[in-house]
Image (tube, rainbow, N blue to C red; front, top):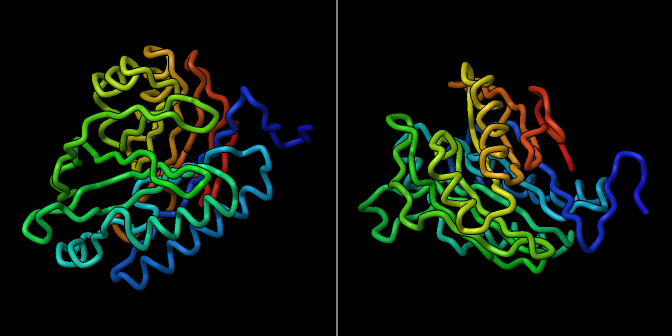
Length: 258
C-alpha cells in the first residue's frame, strides 16, 4: 500500500528518484572515497524514506567533482570495475535498489598516456554493473575527457524497463536522444553538471526531447557552488508526453520522485 509522499512498488510501475547532490570540490583519492561513502549512505537512507523507490540517479561529477587540475584528474581516475563501483554495488544490494553513478574519470585503456573518460554506471539491485556509458561529447575546453567510444546503449533496467543513459552536453544534440529511442529506450537518464546561465534552456530541452521521442526522462543535475561555477539544479522527472512529473528547485540535496 502506498502512503502520502510515496509511490507504491508494483510489478508494472518503476519508482525513480533523482537526487540533486551538491557539486563537490575534491583533490585526492582519499577525498573521493569519503565522498563516495556519503553517496552510499544516501542510497540507503533514501530507500528508507521512499520504500517504493526502484532506481536512484545521481548527477554528473557527484562522486569526484570536476578536477580542474590536470594532474589531479589523472591521479584520481579510477578503474571500472574497481573500489568505487564495489562500494556503490554494495549499497545498491543492501538497499535493494538500482543506481546510476558518475565516475569522472574512468581510466583510459592506455592510462596514463591518454585522458580518462567521463563515465556513468548503472548498477542493479544485486550490486552488478549492467550498463557503462562514456560521454560522447565532452564540454571543451573545460572538460579534458577522451570522447566516449561505446555509443548509446539500451539495457533492461528495473522490472524490465528499457533504459539508456546520456551525459549533460550529449543531451544538447537531438540525434543522441533519437538514437536511444530508436534502439528501444523507454527511459533516458541524463545526469548533468550544468551551470548558469543555461537553466531555462536545459529545463526545456529535457521536456522537448521526452515529447519528441515519446520517452520518460530522468535528469539529475548538480547544485551549489564548487569555487568555479554555480550549478542551477532543477533535477526533474519528465513524462513521455513532455509534462513534468516532478522538479527540484535550486536546493542542495533535493529529491524528486515519480
